[in-house]
Length: 335
Image (cartoon, rainbow, N blue to C red; front, side):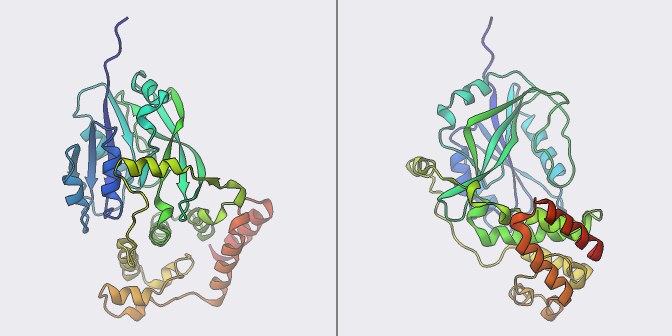
């Protein structure tokens, strides 16, 4: 029996204003990928210049003005399919890194010899801001040996890679995806405020309570769910010239400006039930030079502030039956 032809390993990554971490991501990913396709969605920082400086990177344009994960994933997949088969397509965001044992892993070598149509899952390790511990979010599909399947999903939180119904699945346990989003807590909180506003506008069926619970999940992690971070994850990357701990802290983010845009279009009061009022939007508006910054003052009633306080207080116990019942009561009051 003839050995299977070695597949082309292609990493596909959507980017919008990711200069805070993109150079480190591309250094790490270049260690194992044959090609890296970056779909840049009109970045206003140095993301495009950073991506263009790497030999393995091909930058394509995502000209869409709206947030649409399905559209950007399809752009990336179509670009990946311009390379000859067999193709192993791996979908990572710029804040996601394989652990540095990736090329020494037996599971990795087995993945390279898998049959087309196989879907691969990896454990997703959310690195805490202290960078001394993490919590797991289960196994997530990040890769597939491409068989030409059609991409499924919608504009938000869908699959990143195409797969067919009844696809063969495999979970790689010795390689972990290091999710760096939570290492910059302020940046993460800005992104999640944006998510809440996007959901309010586009997901009319979702209640304010369910939106709150979804985008404050990081406050639900119990102490016994944290796992000590193996320091070799950091140290091995240091040896390879990828310094994961070197992060520049920013004060304002592009999501902040977009949230102000949402408020300009809909009015601040439209978002009074969303828990986004833990920052000074008037001050943020002044920073971005938006006229009449007083328009963005906190519009919440005392009742809404109290409910947000209750939701924050109960978030660590949000999966409990009593809290779920309480959520139902609140939804009946504010939906």
